[in-house]
Image 1 (tube, rainbow, N blue to C red):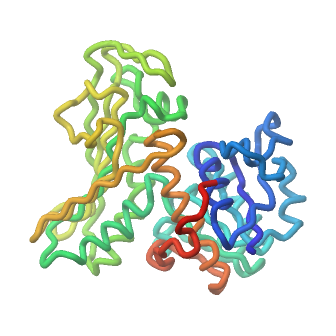
Image 2 (tube, one colour; image 1 turned 90 degrees about the horizontal axis):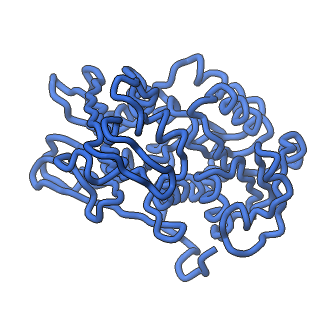
Length: 359
């Protein structure tokens, strides 16, 4: 069994606890938390499993890493603390652990990451013998391995389009929804997540990754942005009211330009209520979905809906993204120490999981 720790117990960390517990080759040996109120709580409670695992959460990073875990699922946010997240990750790599995480956007396409980011990580790998694999929670597989797999089914491919379409009213991160994305803010408010160059910083690596796999050269990466106000005040169960006239929907694209045309596109369509921007793409059931569209001959469209935590679509998206990361751990443990991306790490079947009791 591969001794594995989960570092962070928010939306991603909860799913990570469940995924590690379910994996037949992994053993959850520790859970690291930043919130002192979570110290001492059982991992099963934090992961919403409904039963205890006998692993108490701790804030003692030094002691956990000193125990020599073979793998770390780093689930703490890097959105507003990228330097701290990277320092945590390199600390685990230097301790000899394989680290999987969604938290460092610039390493989605690690080969083209800035040298000032890539070189310290490679130095940590050389020092400690650990490894790092970064993939997104939007989810990463929806912007790399899935569209690439589907692209191979067509005779010709004109455009590869990856969509995330979501109603954020059920998303359990009010600060991110209101301030990073800007839902409920005045229309002259500039949300940090969609400020110029930020979408490219976050998703550009996945566009470059797909371009590399498809064997095409990008002229550049462009961004588009559209925002819509709410026509009327709406009330949400999770986050309260969002007033009429404030931002109610956002649509943006990160476009990989090939020979002057957008050929590889990652698009996000996000609403706080289905009534806002009804002319934009919508998911089949109104709540949320991930979609890949291959424009070509034939035209291919695949929509993925995932649910978890009592039917929550956002939780389902997180769970599938985490599943991709956690399922890579045993492969990474057997591989040479290094810095890996989604084209390096194979998407593997659920060996040993079929018929297992749900955690």
